[in-house]
Image 1: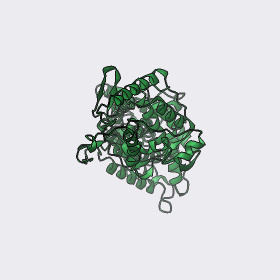
Image 2: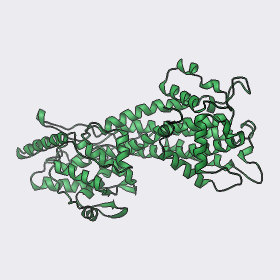
Image 3: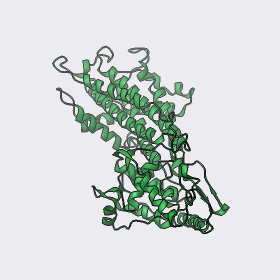
Image 4: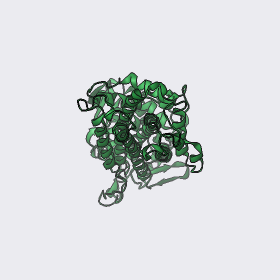
Length: 504
């Protein structure tokens, strides 16, 4: 039920990935109706209002009246549909549609209720616009991507329908929907907002929260396989440095390894482990705490009005401001890139310790019995290192860049959509690195004796073995990496472990 105010990350994923249907709250439609009535009053009074009776950007001082004002909205959509590159995935586009509907339901956009309802019908009936992923500066919002969405709404552009790519008008017709004819202000209301960057960021953030939990899981299995010192995870250490994420991560590793016959006491085999094991709670925890910030900013933005101008009928005002500026999301998704990159970074170091005969505490070199004739997991570590290095390049913040546009009227922009796209790439890359760590950890556990694993790590080992078997002889591992990474991404590990052990 959409009302403009209560969307969460989980709602976005249910609609975007799982094709949950949406409905619109009646009170929200009432707000939309009042806003539109006020716009029509301003038009009758021939008031000079940006976006209603003026041009856009540098043309904001050009007065436009009568039928030209309606033509302006159509021209706006066509001229701003300047996307470049491959299209966003259908799940991202569905998320964009959902967020734009939700923003319009706040009632500050001056759009007709029937237009908002038509967008909801498109979403529910599976009409998914083709939106190129490049071309947004992140202010004034996501103009180019949202214009491609609006093209299909008016019967133009391209869309996917029932798995086929086709002209937008054809997709609408097959879905039993009529295109809309835009009235004054409505073109601008459809495209002036941050919904593309926020949608990408929302899905990436959701996946990163799950990733952080998986990182604790793979670290726990690696710690056991290397016969690590359990004292580093003792709550006494973490209570006196009370970062919530650090405490949660250490607690997860303790719970996952409960009952382990492989972890050692301080001084039993060695006094302390390398940082990639010993400091896993501190590193993972910092990423977890950063995720709390990222989630907060994204969920605020998902339930915000990001138009320009904003319509306030009760106050008898139209305000031309800057809520379309994507800086809050740009900074958040750049943070998301860095925190996700670090989860992969430290995981790759643990992979190196598992395969390196000088570091892996007596395990076979590169986790193969017949080294020399066989290479085992030698190149698996190469692959992880390559992806981690790529992530480091991608993690350079997009938000520190700005290029003036629209005749220098729009002289500072956020680049938030670029940042969000990079964050999603990094998160997906990080899943691949954790998949490699899990496979290496399971291989090592086979040599140590999987029956000695803790309660949670034994479950992890068994699930891994259901996806990919022991590497007794060299085989191409790419399919295993992909299978495990996809399984991890599709599995809510907190929920999956709930009957075994309780992790945060």
